[in-house]
Image (cartoon, rainbow, N blue to C red):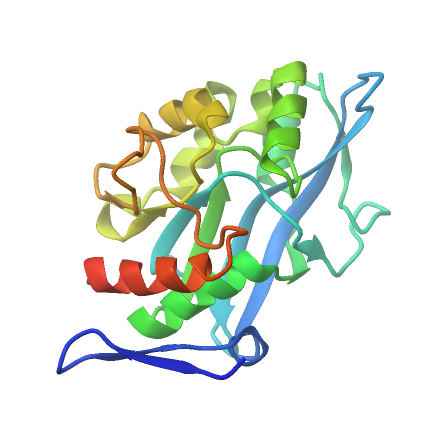
Length: 245
């Protein structure tokens, strides 16, 4: 794929940068962990609590994110380093009294990005952001929305969502500067997300930005990279046309 140059006005030109080029500009790291939940069908859950995307050679320690992105759940991105004896991170007991604290303090590891994260990198290049923090409605890693919801609803495990009351301390720390920065909501159109998204919307600041369609329900926001051919490019071009930061 070659770079696509699009003029949205006579003054402004934006470039849709191919994945193979954009990924060279940024580093990605995430906090991966596992939960031993004791369920017969799902005895061990693979999770990720947060993801950081930042410009190479940029020191993000003690820095405030330039923007926040909230999506459905972690997809196909994966850790590149072992922690706690596993590439999927340390294993926590689901009923442990310190579970919230353990999740909050999960170490960060170098991460292999997925196609959605390349889309976020394109926004970073466009808006000149150095550092973006990616959070999710749920930590549960799964590449298929309906399958993710099936597992989530079956287990009904409150610690699997950053926006649940039991993880208030972690969420408040992560989002303490969100009212001052762009907050992009892009968790998709699945109607099964109604409860999770309502929970998140009640705890996010009012300055959220996201794309909807004429048929969108109030909690539905287009995902940055849907499986429909060409949808990712359309999302990107529409977003940078509608929102200036």
